[in-house]
Image (cartoon, rainbow, N blue to C red):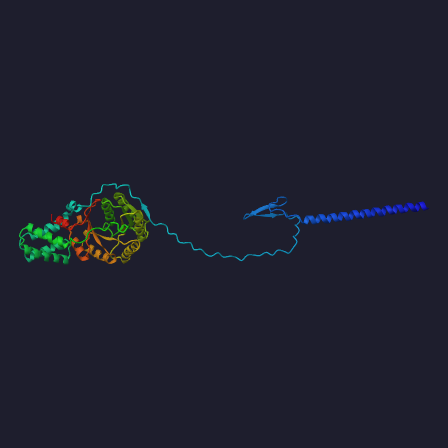
Length: 424
């Protein structure tokens, strides 16, 4: 009986020992599990480019990790919940770009040398006197025939006056000349055509005021190029005159820049470029329809930069009856004057227009300070008397005359040579 009891306590003790061992093992395992979970919470987050279980999409250069719906969410980080702060919108100050005006001009380089030989300016009028055949027949020969017949009665003097009027001298100029002729012929006792020719020559030369300064101011001064503005109505030959004058200056050893300020006539700039090639001069031009004053200003500026002796500005033809066009011519001169004074304003008149040409000259003189007259097409008219009239009524000298269509048919005006050509 005692032996049975001892065995029972042994079995009970063994069971209790097993239970205690199991309890200890369970506690140890539980503690290890808690430690393991705590370490996992402190592991760093996965990098943005991690490719284990998600896909990467790119937007504006930033990587965003997308996880499948079945994946367990990562545990929220400990600490206070972050507060998203949206920065206040910053409105940039409006920036007004400065207006950019494209360069309206282009420069045609001058050829190395003129394509044609240029005749010297000296003595041109003498060489071209044969071109005045029409004026000579109606003016000089008619007057000599009337005056050389001896003592004249009133009817003869009326014929002399009619001849002067037909030659386009105008009433006032004609009356003044007749008074001088009657006085001189009576004082010298004229009886022959040769005597009449001598008196007539003296009176006509004096009427042209030979003492006036007829030089074209086209020489540099104070380190700046001379500025010559060429104006006139349509069809008088402004562009041609500008080109021919450039040849005269180049023949004298001067460097010239041409400004194509006639931007309304499509062919004007091309025509001036051709003249530049013939004369050996640079041409500054603008697009068709550009502001003439802007082109003229750039031409003067360029002439100063390259050290040219003179810049010749060819302006658009304008009717003297159009106030807006005339005002624009005044604007061209004012704008150019900001860069340098305009030394010469040459008004180009068509000698064949007669009285209308004088009216044009008066209107132009009111807008710009005309300093000289250029009479073109003088070889094609019997009205050479316009030379006397325009000088008397404007008080401005005739400086140049055109006696043909050739490139060198522009001559400096010489009163004595002109009268001699009329009376030849």
